[in-house]
Image 1 (cartoon, rainbow, N blue to C red):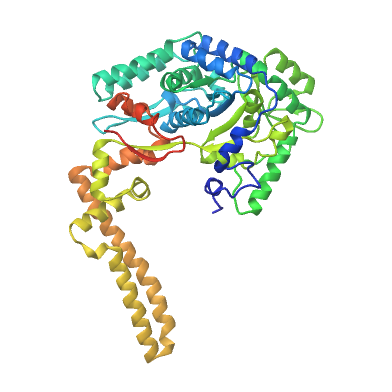
Image 2: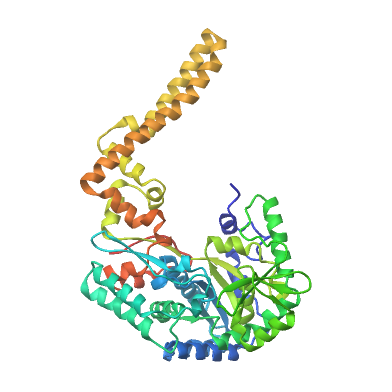
Length: 520
């Protein structure tokens, strides 16, 4: 297993691969961006928010600040998941808003922007969501989102509305909180002139986080796509240059003991084209012309397409951050661990567009502890990480300790190991030829004893779970569907059960918070 890029980045030891570290936030704030037409950007965002139905006094105030000639942006982004998707999608936006507030100054305004990944066409990753009600019932909703089509092109369907509202009807929670969340969702579905799958996501995120100072941005909106067209045209001039630099970084990462997250095979560009059948396909370049699995294009063809509808040519993961920063005066990019690993290969892509890589800021991370789970963790004297790594073991060991069952304790295993060490020493004194056999016996015996201890601990946990359901409760809350909470559970779960209290708690955290938050 390779070294962990995100862990090394947080230590500030990846200077070869990332221009700045989290410790360089003041340097990032002091740096100035190349000239960028902020007035045009604000005008395009105003047009987008007007069409989205979210243009109000708060948005206008943020756009005025963005128009300032020295303004900067803290940007984050995520795929447009169902009903906001996993909780970290909301956490990222909150972290961006909190960091922007922290870095904001009167003469250099800092505005938070949420980049809605409407160009993404991976339906499987955005079509489902998970919520947990007060009866400890997990609700998993999956919509039949068409594959291969950018979600910003997928029209929200009436039957999807019915499925969402039916889930809310089944969801056990206080009526007043359910009604408030239902109103949020209905506004997100019905509001504005735009009615795509991504628009519903954008309106939900805006409704949650706009009060904290966050703008949403959809790169497929015509006004915004036009502003990115020059950068995409520039990419067409050297269509394999960014891929070559990503591959070079991949080789250097491999040599340093890391596993690269991005690979660019021969001939692959960092551009997708949305073809006439609405499918988004990767462009390849053979030195003369461009092609997908279905069509061939000249550079002139693609430039004409870009001129007619710039939203149909979109960046791949290896290019999107740089294209994003040709549009925005980015100070910091709030990212998750996987995106940090991507970023380690992109430092040298930015100069192709006259830029330098901005600060990558590790996203805020929260595990929510509802009152019953918080009490249970205190009783078990266990952390969230311990439960997520071994839920049955945590419960079983706690029960064993309560019953004073020393047979399954680590101390008991250590005492057996110490006794075997003494035995080997005594045998060696009697007959040195027995040392090897004794050592082999020790190496076989200890893992077998440890295995028996685990079986006993798991048996205790199963028996207790049959009686009280504690293990099932822990898993549903902290490891729903076998996935860590933040990556699976929808943030609306907590608003449905506890009102806006979790949202207020989230927006009161520090921008770099990582840990558990107990809901009162």
